[in-house]
Image 1: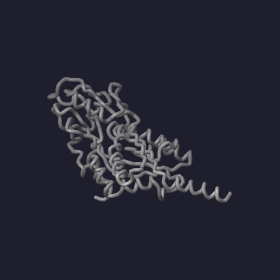
Image 2: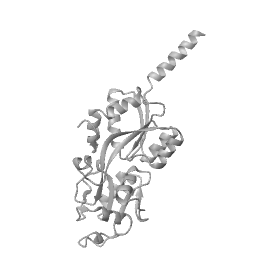
Image 3: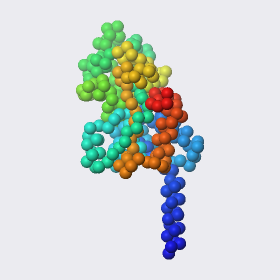
Image 4: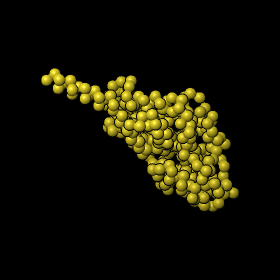
Length: 274
């Protein structure tokens, strides 16, 4: 009987010791950073089994609540209702800043505009301004085609807070799930406008200055650029901080010099080590 018990105990220890599964859900913005981190980690540990989903910050935090993810990526901090729910359920989610980002305002390269004010941007997205010549009389009298991330997105939450002052977007705004889709549409339509994390910007679109400030690394770090934000990952530490295992390894790597270099490679601003 003792031998059987020891064998079962040994098998359990082996399973726990060699568990290499990790589930990460959440922000579409952080997806490129997480992808690079996972690729680098797998070079050293090919047996790592990591699932990565990028369907929006709110989906990641919801998954943390229901226990279907180990890490929630979020391009925003917790909402008041999420903090309330956390307290009601006697849970504690620890925030970890992993990088910084600026929300870039993009238009088609053919549109003859280089700068936009926060007030004008707000008026476009709330429907008070509908055509480009209302922005500038030298621009065409063409309806502005407006794109936004959907409400599950942390990028949407940041834009709503910093630009709209929580006013409602006009019903004509096209709400989409994918940042890449926004870029594709703006690159094809000379009268479109959208907002995306700077890490997603390509040469197929034009980035506007906001209040005549470029979303450069320095301007984002010192928050001079008006639509700057930290990027987070949240972990459930209700039962304590992970002192070993794959979650700890992932966090340690992400905050290391190499991990932060990869965050910059993805187009964002390193939070540490520089």
